[in-house]
Length: 94
Length: 359
Image (cartoon, rainbow over all chains, first blue to last red; front, side):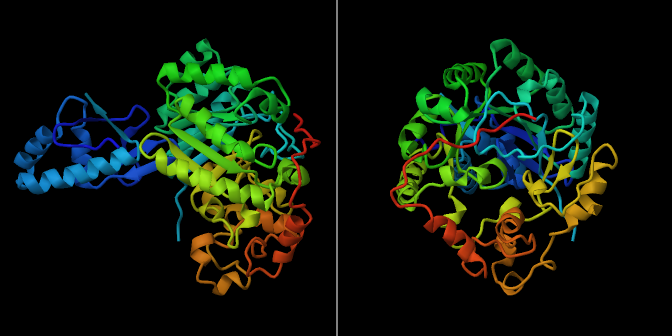
């Protein structure tokens, strides 16, 4: 099973649309028959998933922005991204 | 308590080139003109304002609507995630490109079997090979492909090869749904109901495949509820999350709700979707738990399964308020057991069903 590591380059899968819920302003992922509400940190991570940036680069960018230590943020980001990978909502670009 | 609808099923037309004996369309079609392009577009915009995120474009066969790309464009403009639920008959490269251009998000193709011989018998038309070709075109287009296969006595033994077909076609999602016994499915129940042995063989095949395919293909397996001991949480509760608009504009809390003869449905030509969702008698009839009889009213499961399916209760007990008779706590469970015990353990697949007809 393919897993996300700090050198992975994640991107949203082609069938997934990131959108703001017009009713309550929450960030959501839409995909066939499903919706996933993102918390604020997952939203920030997903916004950086462009298929170019590596996970460790995303983490560095976010830790500068939010003053969270990098190891904690990296562990959180990997957990979040592996969950999205299991749900087939992101892909890893080579 | 207020509820928010998340998904709208738009049944665009009852016309269909297939004749599947379990079709979810009503056996007796309602009278009236199909909604026009602008009427559907208005409904989609109203649905989005109510909170709807997902739109299923269904039928009949939605490709029978020549204005389908305009409807998809309307859905995209409203911000809905649109899924075309199709037999794929009539889905050629040009049509697919138009739909993709208009903003279609995903496509769900029905298959009746993994091979043409049986598939075409079930569909009542020579369509299996055209479906394969259409699935290939969808994959080439980059649109996400879901396969939906309705399971019953004639095809459930082919589950392994059906799953292999979905993998081979590159589907991201496979829905394996056992026949629901309403409408045409109820009419053909004697031919369609799988035996207990068939159901028990199918479960491990589906669950092992689901595990194996994690991260590759989402596999949804819906058990035939007659073999369950607790009812399904039908529609996640009446009027809680879903609404259906049928071809003539009637708004239904579930696609089969017309099988409850005493219910009257309101029409988008006469009322706003918001009024129908919030105020109409049909949507409020079975909302919440106050309507429930015993044993549901005092059952700890009442917010889990919502008393099961109202249409099934009406069909099997004559009373839409009754506990879903699938539940072993229902005083009417014997009606389900009688149907199952009438089915011989060694019943063989039979295809002498009544094929679905167009209006």
